[in-house]
Length: 279
Image 1 (spheres, rainbow, N blue to C red):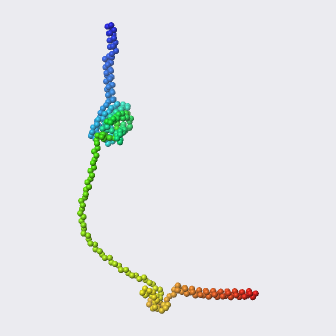
Image 2: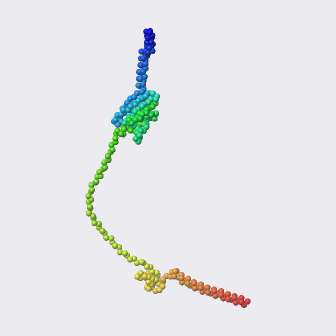
Image 3: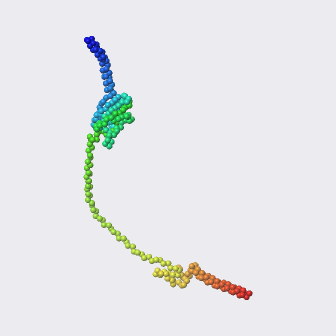
């Protein structure tokens, strides 16, 4: 019986690991912990915006963050990194009171740029207090830029409404009007023009003179004469006066000649008639 108990105890001791094995296992676990802590770690970085400091929590896998700054002009967060793996992963938690992306009162997507290019990223957690982004980074990445819409919470910094006071109307002083004495204007009488009665000029024909506006016979010379240069001369006969007299004579002569020709013709016809009857 005693020998059997000793043999069982020796079997149990033989199955237990030796001290050397335990030391090797311990060293391996320590190395694994060191390596794991070197590639996966959680840290906090402080960023200052408009004189206010904010703590930003992030976790890097094969990623080392060297600096984190805010660009208030472009509303962006710039992160300088060193990526030693392919790919590396950066998981960053953004407090809404610090940095957010909102459009018309609702959450909007952040714009993420990795060395100027758009990487693969996702929003893994969203609460009323914060938003968490997971960004995949290729080997050799140097800069990450996250663009949002606002720094600081709009609810925490209420905007005081500016009360516009109505401007008081300033009434300009009334200047006393100085009344200048009116100067008497000298009135120059306008000369009244007397109407001039212009009698119409009447021209009289030869042998007549103008007396009291009427043409009368000039009795200073005899009939058929007119006074020219103070002497009585024979009144010249114009063609218009001669023409009617000559035309009358020609008419009388023509009528007489017509009667003569008609008598001759009638006489000839009578003679011919008698001759025909006698035959």
